[in-house]
Image (cartoon, rainbow, N blue to C red; front, side, top):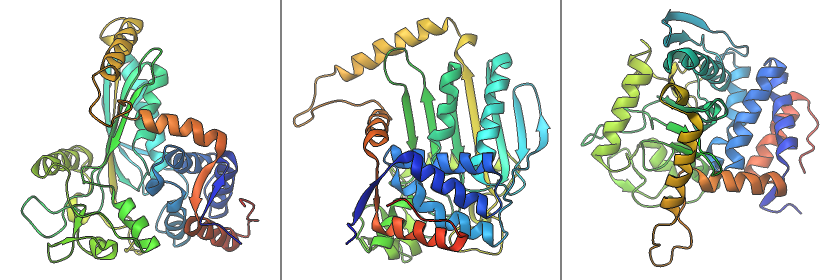
Amino acid sequence: MHTDTMLIKANCLRDYCQQLFTKVGVPADEAYINADNLVDADLKGIDSHGVSRMAIYLKRLRLGIVNPALQLKIVTESPGTAVYDACNSLGAVAAGKVMATTIDKARSTGISFITVCNSNHYSAAAYFAQMALEHDMIGFAASNGPARIAPWGGTEPMFGTSPFAYAIPAGQELPIIADMASSVVARGKIIMAAKKGEPIPSGWARNKFGEDTTNAQEALEGTVLPFGGPKGYAIATMIEVLSGILAGSCFTTTIKDLYTDFENPTCTSHYFGAINLAAFGPVQEFKATMDQFIVSVKSNPKAKGVEEIFLPGERGLKLKQKRLQEGIPLPRITLDSLRQEGEACGIRYDLE
């Protein structure tokens, strides 16, 4: 008898997902990036952006509305900037390639920012921001998406959940890695709740009539609320401009929904940045100061009931180490979906 949740080894899960991607025409090296991107989210506990997304990615590839092989075209370029057209390629592969280019540019220019148009969903933004860490740089990543959030005071969805991330290197301490949506919660968590038939907390979303709801399905038909009220709305506005408009791409309601529109490309846009620490001073001095900063934050007097103060991303990195050892807990609904995809692709399902 199957349990509701099973622990699956990360390398086995990655290999299986890579095989699934290759079966629908994705080149092997690019299939690995896509699979690693999703598994990394699950390792850090961002289950809403992990392998639960495999089914929708594969469906769009089978329907031919996503380009299975990466194509990147330069729209415009300067020593420290660029605009790339991803030609409807898979988001994670395009994002990884462009972030690597952003890092390369920052080596000589100190700071580099690049936008990408005509792309697709790329899972968790931190995966790309953290690429800068091993190069002694601060990394940034952001993306627009289909309309989920209404303008503050409105009822019709217009802005995406506008995910953004940053990654800051340290010395002996763990790096600081933040990854968040401009909404109170990532819509993926509402999707997961709807799949499981579970309610969502009050304050996450409103139904199509603009009323607060705890029903996940009603929330999917309505709008997600921005975090911090008008402050989250202001940040979503900035990300829409940096990702979509600066790239000369689609924005707000012109972006298609990967879960409901199976005829058109999503036309998602991204924004990446890298700051070379060496352009501002000695790298090791910066890292040593970051360690002092991190220790000072964690040493702050704790509120009642608080056992430890965490820096952004710290819990996810520690959870990743634990899950690399013990395995990733996947719910039955996700395992069944992966099994079905294996059957559709003619791949032996061997995760359990």
